[in-house]
Image (cartoon, helix red, strand yellow):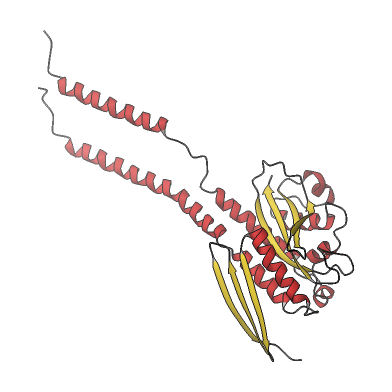
Length: 184
Length: 124
């Protein structure tokens, strides 16, 4: 003889199993978005660090510079020397990488083992036919394409005297310094 | 039919209450990451540094030692802004005696900024 007393419990069990399987299906089937919510926060901070460093480099650092209306950044662009410009590299890395827990920047670290913020810098000027040309200025490491970079820019007014810059000599020109920087 | 025991209904009710509170806590945790993202996104989107920088260079350009270079520098700023920053930057510099005015216009497609900068240029 079959006992029919527990039928309601059986139906309840089936319903519960159905709900659990549905939930498991929803969870497994869900698409994961691999963008952590704070990616943009670190981007924003990196951009702020880069902008601040460029602003500091574009500010006169002694009385002579104030009186002649120049800045370290301006002097670097007026005589860039060989690529990558060592002054820019040392100054920018020092400004962006200084902080608690970061090893002090000496020349060897700048050259090879510096592990934190890396950059590549260029400047752009306009010639008399309104064409725009970019020139590399300095870099700490080559861009391979895999880096997640942010861009910081700075306007600089330069005068290269008798050396030609984008079609003019002995003229003040505005150039745009662009730095791509990334964490490594 | 099974004989159902109705004695412990309030225990089941408390179970529901606890599970619902967990549900709402989960929603709060879920939303908290989005808050940081949207804040940072809006900070990135607003060109604070760009506007400050372009104001600074405009201020420098109107006080160049050789005033004839102003036209060249002005065109540099306009053309390079369009090409490298995709923003429209234009400014007008007017002097009338000691009264000096700079009208700055900036638009990067998201943010528009206009400034009427007026000052008395020191004579000495």
